[in-house]
Amino acid sequence: LRICGESRKRQLKEPPLVMGWLPFFGVMLDYIKDPLGFLQATQRQHGDIFTCKIAGKYFTFVTDPFSFSAIMRQGKNLDFQKFAMHFSQRVFGHADFSGPLLSESYREIHALFQQTLQGPPLQQLTEVMLGNLQAVLGRSLPSGGRWKEEGLQSFTNRIMFEAGYLTLFGKEERLLPVERAAQVAATCMMKAERDFMVFDRAFPVLAGGVPIALCMRAWRAREALTEELVQSKLYQRLCISDLIQRRMDAFNRMHLDETGTARTHVCMLWASQANTLPAAFWSLYYTLRHPEALTAACAEVDRVLKESNQSSYDHDQPISFSKEQLESMTVLDSIIKEALRLSSASMMIRVASDNFAFTLDSGQTAVIRKGDYIALYPQLIHLDPEIYPNPTEFKYDRFLDEAGHVRTEFFKGGRLLKHCLIPFGSGASKCPGRYFAMNEIKQFLLLVLCRCELHLVDSAAVPVPDSTRAGLGILPPSCDVPIQYRARAAWRGE
Ligand code: HEM
Image (cartoon, rainbow, N blue to C red; front, side, top):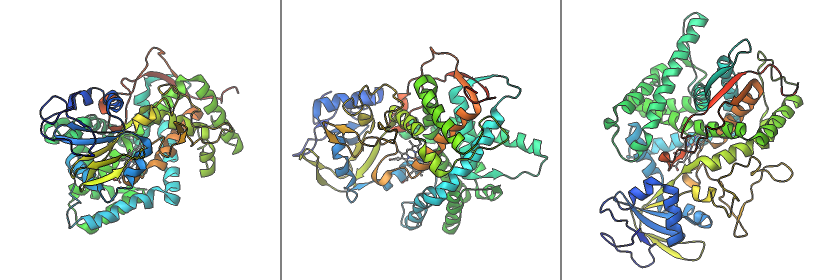
């Protein structure tokens, strides 16, 4: 690393400037190779705040978690919506809602996230998801006690994608004999999942600024997903979620064209799945990999089943859980949070809409230039050994206190941290689907433990989070791991 002032000079009270040695790209290559390692090394060299030149842009990284609140309070000077809208419009090709004609109506659409993903609508969404998960999982299990082999990632993606898709966008109504209709639906869902994965795999390249027109496979996949989500087709589906129904009504009032509207639905599909699928994978993988986690999770599921007089192996009898029962499953909650801690590599970005100064927790004043980006990188906190001892180790009960309740207090340097686990972002860009995401992953774990006998086949296959997607959210595994599973005929020990 080299600090110099090729095209820009560090001004008084501005953070240290890390320009790198490439004229336009700055430190881009070092950053891309290993984002976390690069930021940790730069933090050691320059402290809690520094500005890096990356591909012609200036990113100011704030690495001290105690200063995060100071950033969140800068709403007036730091814009999230404009940046996010521009990015999303470029990748998904939907209408530009930041213009004067549409921005007012878009505020109404944005408000729908809070209205339909929290409170009573969340409860309804969660119940529908449980029904869909049971139906999809039930269909996946081989009959007659036979074992089936598959990759764990393939298994998780297949079940979570279909159940999540049906929960948001409803079921297609087909005037066909029942079996034929089920076959057609399964084929369509496989195609949608395939298209989603092709598009999602290209996401890092698209996020890096490559136009989608240059990624033909990703473009075709996105357009195929779009075609299935045009309003005329959605109107023929049953049990559409409140979120999508109300978005459709709002888009109708805005007189957007059909394709532009459908592309906003693809954007919603991506937001609801791209992080959830790898998060569900890691949650189940770590549970299977760690016998003490599996034992504790099974004991918890068993307790809740017994409390409600339900049987795990009567596959014809759907399982149901109340909101309170779901909330009482603190072991599953801790497993999911620990999986999120280990696999999350999101980046929170804001754009300085003006020159401004703010004060860090240390008392130091930092001057930020208009047009620069401010970036927070939560993985620096998630893997900080001072906050989480042995940070790369999976500890299923890390988020439990001694009484088995949810643990929320974590410390750094003896001080209580406000932001200690932020896979869902924070402030203006906090994920509105976070409660639903936690519920659906919990339900997935719970159902798999109830309904399946499932084990890892090859203990030598050890996936690691694939850091080529760093900055974009939950990292998928570097490779799939083979599993064997079959329908559970009796609960453990019975
Ligand atoms: C935004 C994480 C699941 C809907 C975000 C952001 C993060 C995030 C970090 C902020 C992005 C940014 O700052 O640019 C996650 C994780 C999930 C998850 C880790 C699963 C484990 C979901 C689900 C839904 C959802 C299930 C919907 C059903 C959204 C939406 C936004 C968003 C709509 C954009 C919010 C806005 O524009 O203000 N998510 N998410 N997410 N998420 Fe999630």
